Length: 272
Image (cartoon, rainbow, N blue to C red; front, top):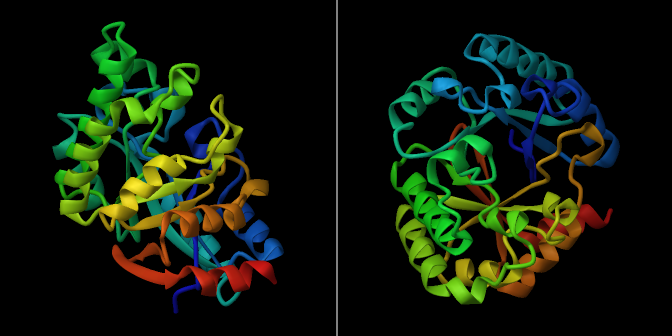
């Protein structure tokens, strides 16, 4: 049986820059009354791309074993689901197909981490605006591959150049990318960890959330927690932002099928 809602973006110590295991996150979820979690640690990628901040291919069985243990331990108290956060850039498609077939995943989350050094070495040409426009093209390409259920934190460039961030200036680029994403029916994340970043707001910003709502793009919630204490962090505020943007439902994924829940129903549980 599925939970009412999930924190659908969580990391473990296997990614080498987070703390805890799925059991620890489930325990914190139970303590805080979060009914479901989806573990989405950083998946391996080919060619050693930022290998110091993600699990290796050889660690995937251990990762699945950890999740299976948490599922059994917390059954009936917290619904624990298995996912992956997978980096996308052009050329990774065949690798991603292999990852998708590597287990019975509940959720495959795609990410364009334009802030990573390897990505910057490939694409940054000392023009922040051009780089941001390229980021949105890659975000749309990721959706168009059909390999991902949803895409994460869709305005990462604002954390790289907070003093320059002005989404209205590139409204045309963002709008075209969102049009392409909407055509694929891939969901986007409202990531609450943005409040801890150099541009302190959830991501995407309310400006982009409104553009997403105009295109009927579905939204899921993720804390992007790298430590168990942040499970479900910021969710009441996130629901308020979604309401203000015109959303009435949030989404999550189980066995790679999207499920929608009324925001008001989730908010009533959060208030308790």
